[in-house]
Length: 337
Image (cartoon, rainbow, N blue to C red; front, side):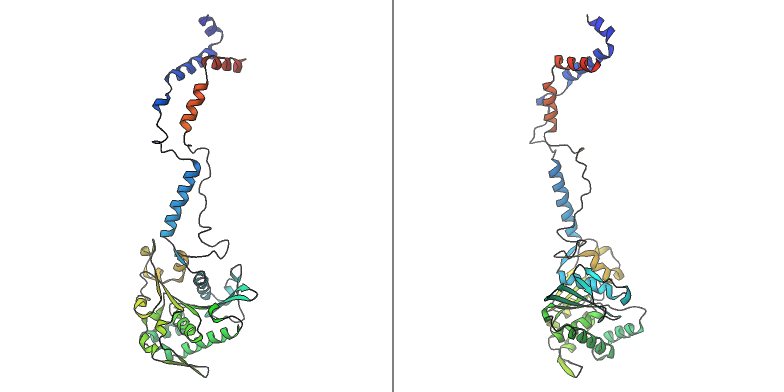
């Protein structure tokens, strides 16, 4: 009978023989690892692990700064551009104020209606500018305070601020990179506003001389006493930047940014304003494109079909156990009819 069936239906018997062989040689429950000892994780768990690891790696290579400081960083980058080439918006509600900006200063207004903030962002030394090089030499000579350039720039800061009398002092942020940190320090102290310095050359000043001086401008005399301890001025510096090296000995509020990747940069790269944007992220997202805690992860691979599931081996074994020789033979016969 078996020979007859094998002669008439060779493929059917071969397939049934294969099933019987697999059935008698397959692993039994006792051969499988226990759920406790298995390292197989669900797709959801693997995704959570990936996000957690990516979050940790991201935090090691990025520095969280106050949102207003981050906007000021963006503005200082724009200040290096020609006025006609500057971005009109830093984010949805921060617009460029072309009428009060100039070649050195980029002015941005943020907010709507009665709640607004003003950002006066000043670029540092341009190697193509003789004026800037002269200013750099005056910093080294400690004569920058009485320089006509300094007086002119601080005067411009005051005039810009006066264009927005309805904005309170604590909503105004004056920032400068490198050489311009001197102007932002003087401007914020005189106007009693917030100030930021990025890799500031103010660290090279004889700050004690500044603190014992007065500043005469626009028919007014301003006392610079304790300017080095001015609470509302924060000096941000990239670790290893040579220009701002002495900041912690000359200014009160100094934030040193030292995260993974910075040590690989050259001194020139460390001093660049672009480095701040590369390694800093805002505490609160300022736009849909902002690097922030809410938007820093992008799924790398969402193909879950190939991901092993916890207990999958037991499920396969259960399905195999439910198959009987008679049931398998009927299934094979049905497929071959």
